[in-house]
Image (cartoon, rainbow, N blue to C red; front, side, top):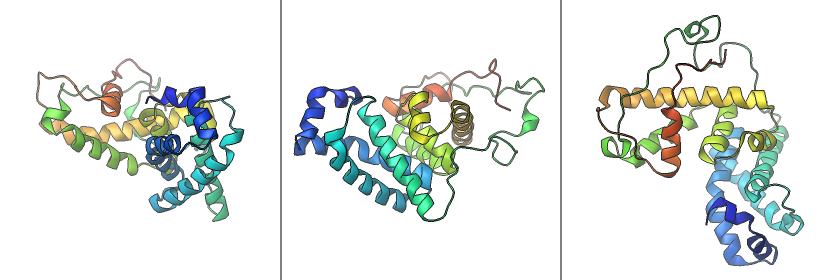
Length: 237
C-alpha cells in the first residue's frame, strides 16, 4: 500500500469502524517514522517511543473526528510533533524549533568557504560515480546514513526526516513542526550538508569509477540529492 492509499475514503472508513487489520497496517507503516520525527524533536529515542505510544492512543481516540483536510500521514506527524513539544515543555526544556539563523556554531559549512556573493570559494566536487550496493551493500550504506542523521542537532534531524526520509513537502514540514519556510529551508540545507559530508568521508577514498547509483526506494532518493550538482547554486550564508 502506497502512502496515497492511506487517504482512500474506504481505508479511512475502515479505521473509523475499528477494523483491526486497518489499524495494524497503519501502525506497521508509520510507527517507526513517527519515532524518528519525535526523536528529531526531543533528542531521546526512549522518550520518543513513549511519545509515539501516547500519540497512537490519541489517534485511536480521535479517528472518528478525523476530516481529510490534510493527508492522514500529515495528521499523524502533527499529533506526534505536538506531543513531543508538549513533553519538552513539561520537563522545562525549550524546544530548538524554530531554529536560530545566526552565529557560526550551528553552521554546516564555515563562513570562510563562501565568497561575498554567497557562492562557494571552491565548489564541492561530485563524487566519482559508484554503485553503493556493489561497493558497500545498500544496507551498510543506509545504516551509515541513519547514524549520520542521528548525530544531527534535533531541529535539523526533524526536518531531514520529514523531507528526505518521509518525503513530506516543504509546506507539510513547516505545518507539522510549526516553523517558517525560511527556517525549514536553512535547517534542511544544513542537515543535508552534514549528512553528505559524513558519507563523503566514508566513500571518497574507495569510490571506484565507471558505475552508476542503483539504490532503490529511500536509498535511491537519498542518492539523488547527494549527487545533486552544487556548482551553480548559491549557498546559504
